[in-house]
Length: 383
Ligand SMILES: [Zn+2]
Image (cartoon, rainbow, N blue to C red):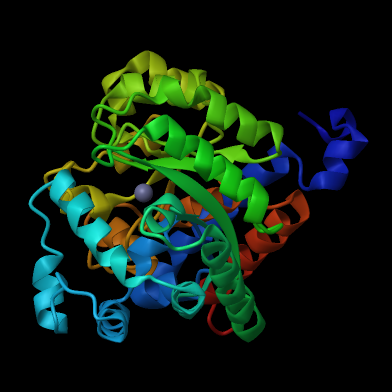
């Protein structure tokens, strides 16, 4: 496409697709050129980053879990940081979910949610993350008797405090917890949407479903996602993490997925890979999470490089970072050192996260420009 065929509206919204491709190639080459001028850490730290798949509750730092457990007298939780780290050694995905649901019991009131949101956002800002779309799970708190008003007010307060302190922007994606034992999941789906539409601020941007996939077929959530989409929310379900390609198809066909959380099992189905590529439906990929829950054996066999090679839109994310002993920064370093990706390739992942986000086009161009400037500055340190 040439400039003469670009409609004025598209030109006003940002660079043309041709310009973006050229920009990517140049920026990617500049990123590769930083190998002689900056360490991996300097490269990752200098890169302004966006996170699209991170859970608020899964971001609770060990010190915060311990402090809140003591404050509220919560039992069943290890009482020092070493024991907590050992507690975070997961046997499998279901063991991970069981530990997760025990840990969140320390969150009791608005103050706790404000603290968690503030700490999490400040932790992202400290890694040069500029923007994050963050899941949280209202039902796992309201089912324990916490009022939804307190949950939503608390996280919003923490978000605004962190933004005032650092400029980091957070948007919220309430999600439905799949696989809670003995619970009517469709009732939970309805409550999650109801809470979101009743208590959500203008920072609310989507609806998700997380937790177990096994035994939690996605088609049954079509009405909940339809209601959310009618209210202007985007559809961001987890799918294809612990179950196969069929779940990803269901997320697309029944839930109108704008992006897929994980989705790595899409590789089992070449027709699905083609669909993700042609319809530009991105996968939010979380390598260390997949290792720690036993979904993937090791970094060497992680499918991210293969997905990139096949042209599937992907970004790099941290999921539940302290629980998995990682951070977004660490995921970028793993991509360079353990997944064998070049700096140019990692720079493309960082740009992809901006493009796959639900930010408005002007803000995307600003962030992409900041990324390009940061990389060029590293490539030519004397400039
Ligand atoms: Zn997740």
